[in-house]
Image (tube, rainbow, N blue to C red):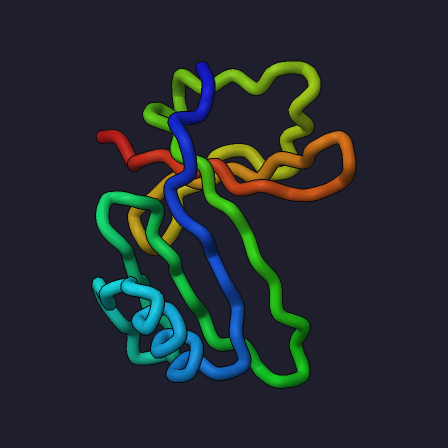
Length: 114
């Protein structure tokens, strides 16, 4: 089974408020904000942008999250190195981390099934 496109872009920032305003100026609408300086924005039907504030002492990162319709049916091709298998998250998704041939890590995200 293959992925089903990009689900989200995960961005870390040192200033949640400024980052959110930047994306809102580009036409993104706030879907929700948390009480710990993070939140999700979306522009139309495209992938969401989830922004999380991290301490100034921490380097900021970016992660692309790919959709997987069914974690149980997903089988990684031999070229795809599985770093961590699918695990249920506290926010209601199952996520897997994989590594590409150049060493970058990617997140695969699937719905939790009963």
